Image 1: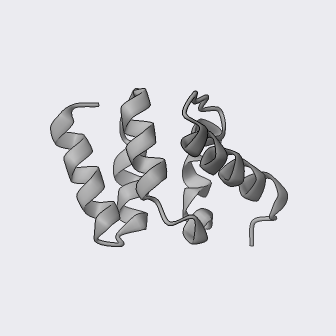
Image 2: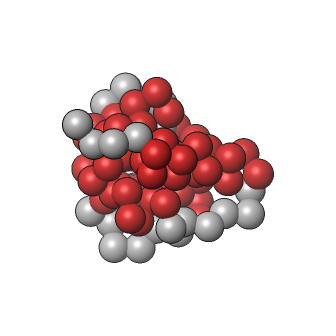
Length: 85
């Protein structure tokens, strides 16, 4: 993910445009560790249901950073235990 794209993604997250940020992030072919860290850290976990379109990709991400790994584990738990409405 190019730096300019990461900046755009973070702007969306910081503006509370989580749906748009998920759409933007999902269009990326490859997610590098920094992009995943930036996305997961900036994403409001209360809005976890917005992650359903990227469920398979986001739940398969592995991370060595403890803070990001905990947030990813929460996302994985929520997406895999709560039924879709």
